[in-house]
Image (cartoon, rainbow, N blue to C red):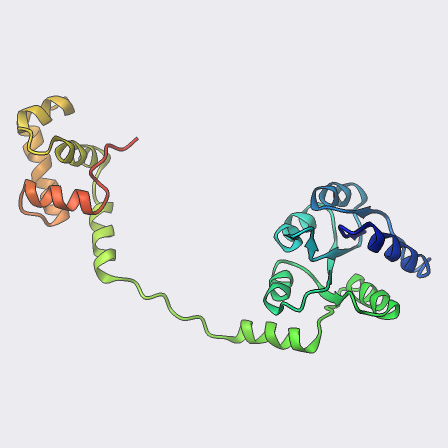
Length: 222
């Protein structure tokens, strides 16, 4: 199956591959990714020769969907020398890349290799892919303070988070008022606050108010 947004290019490819019959034949041609997805699901092509640039839209973004939708293997047909984009295409599932400046013999050979399960990559692109895979991944350094705060917040129950939001929104309201809003007694509210202070390591309502505003606990949960 052929996918290219230039009708003249599609016509030329169809004529070129007609000379490769009966070894291979074109089962369909598409000019945009929507048509390509629908055609792949219908035709179930063995290989898709896919232009990497479809009218300013990168077909790489749709490769997983194309392959999941019925295409067996994808071969990128590219005029770009952007190595990062070509590497991204291979990481997204493409089995190879062939340049638009390739000869007819090279293009037919590339399609045949991809159909047989081989990869078709220029040496420079292969080395770049290998280098990316071999490069050590830098460890993620976690902020100890952020981790501690996240652990504190994770201890809160939904009821406690609701009370914290009410305290923050009340901005100095009496315990009696907060208790009435929460439909609990003042004593129960005080018990909740004691537990909240311990979990968040704050000493009083002022510190709780500051903590809530700083860490997004000052709004009632949905």
